[in-house]
Image (tube, rainbow, N blue to C red; front, side, top):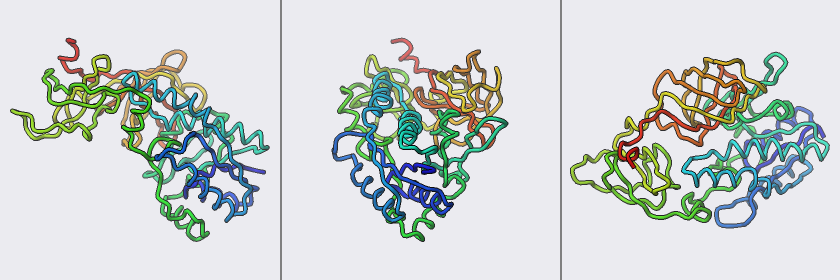
Length: 367
């Protein structure tokens, strides 16, 4: 076996397997189960069936592995702890680091595979004597943001067969090869847990209580079902009706007081309470294995769909903690999310956002 491809049951991993096979590689397939329980939101069995059909169509040996314990310990426990602390974690980043490029890679090696392949829209290249993670050629599908925690060992052993392709071409190739998932819609939702009502799902693990929604002056404007369910900049789900003496402009979450179960909101998409110029971040993962120096000029993203923003970065002596100063103020920079750094097409790595210089509502500061 040359390579073990992770078949998720979707079209991207299916075409990845197809391309590897067409290139003459000895390919085998692995389906990962990472969540126990067959509740209404979990489509694992359907996905496994689709992956098995793809493997059968291509004539690939098919393996399965259950990483549910690793997922719970390495991803989901942290996910819950972050929400409990009032932060907004990104489970896809941890899922990639702990499951797809650790547990999966270890399992592949145990089966005798020297490399793994996934259906991510990313590329790899060389920078001197180091491997580099590059953006996917399709800017609309680039997933390097979620892969920024990959180290040199994982990157050296990972292939991204569709990294040079646009999504429409991936679907065309799947249809031409009569792959049964060629028209299957892209999955969304929490990594490996599936698509479900997020609020109902989270409430199974975090006890939430109704609390007040207040404006920046501390005046009550509504109630919420639990601060855990909301993130900075969010508009949906607030259900704030007409407030006497206020305009009809929409309300947005601008702060959370977890200890007192109070949600703070303000009117206007560009509320000054959502503006940040500086953030601090910890747990930096440098893809090259070390920082390029004490300071850095580059671009950054603080969320997946964000356009690149020019910034200056101060790096501590160990390279694990960052202070990022943006050239322009950014909206809704959220603790718990990732700031990911780029040098052109090269993803340098990323860290978890800890604090920002966003202005807090005066009534919250006085509490």
